[in-house]
Image (cartoon, rainbow, N blue to C red; front, side, top):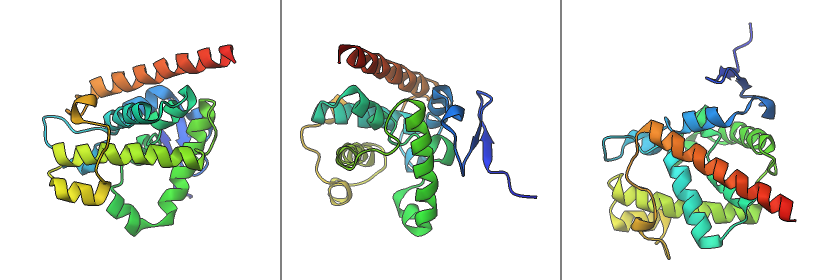
Length: 201
């Protein structure tokens, strides 16, 4: 008997990890899952884990402030870690050990998620680099405020943020239910902007 390669979601969908279908992707599952996946393997200060959902909100905020992206670009920034609602947040050092297999699954999931919401299956390289920069800025603040890194360590691994300060971002860890709600609300707000942009064009 072959091993089961799908996960049942709370929405009732069954998402095949090896061949994910956009039809089995639901925002409610993404928001729920990401709000319960901890960044930094949970090694952060505070009464609550700093979730991938909250991290995604921070990255999209930084991206928007730095690049004034289009609604489509902002949605891809918000969803940049969306595959982690299924596969969890693997820290960078472990990704380096695991190698390419993880990336293959992650890329397939990203493609299914993007197609489900009418986005390009693959994030364009130039946009991906901008989102990565916003991600590194978020990681700098997470590392120094929450994960016990010194400023010197954080600058070495993530670079020195420019134009973004702690007071601009939602860095204090939120309860999962609140992070889930804010993620879903931000997604829907961007969807309104995307719709308006299509109507105007």
